[in-house]
Length: 135
Image (cartoon, rainbow, N blue to C red; front, side, top):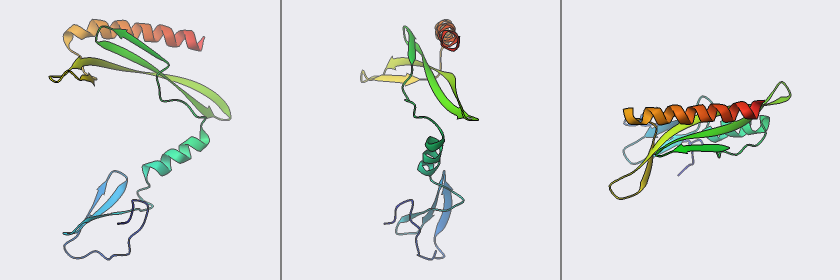
């Protein structure tokens, strides 16, 4: 079976369906689905590789995690090359943790009324941390 990056030489039959699925074109027939690469739909890995050549390598891990009870703020640092100069940008992701019925930890990005005070507190602490880094 061809991979996502290989083109197929099979001609579509009357009963085949062609649909776009993200960055791929998938042709379905009654027997199997065939992925077809197209210049109109480049693969995600091709786009990421091009981006990595232009940018310095950075870790995907947060540089700081601030936790108040079940609410957390993760601060991420990203370095980009802009006009030949390296610039640092920060972003913050908020989440709430809980245990499901099986006792496994789950993380969601929605908050209850009772969580909003904690969200404000971790957001203020993230703001202070980022301002210390850029000064």
